[in-house]
Amino acid sequence: MFLRFAVAVALVALAATPAFAAGPPSDTPPANQGTEHKPATPGPKADLPAKARAYGRQCEDQSKKRSDAAEGTKGTPFSQCVTAMAKLASGKSSSPRAACKALSKRHEKGEKGTPFSRCVVDGAKLLREQRAQNED
Image (tube, rainbow, N blue to C red):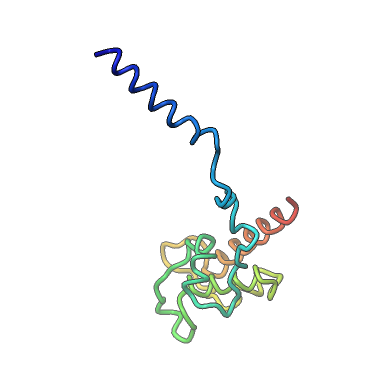
């Protein structure tokens, strides 16, 4: 019984050896495929879902609800912040203050800072990250 089991294991090992020795097939793509064709970050005129995926992390502290004080403004503080980040990333604006000028400078109850000040801080972080990437 033990001898049959040992023979079976040996046969399986011998049958699998050429497959392991050959390595991966030559038509296998490299592990870093696609990195050289990585699409650029979306610009300020891109649709909101594309920008939110790219810059939503920087603006996650912004409200996604339209405030009562922002009657005549376009979009929510989050969407305005995302658009400002797109302007900074594309080079359309080099100053976080200028990019975030559309956001409200009014304090919201229970929030730390204003939407404008939080956007400026997030924009400065984005520019720092971009500079660090360019240096590497």
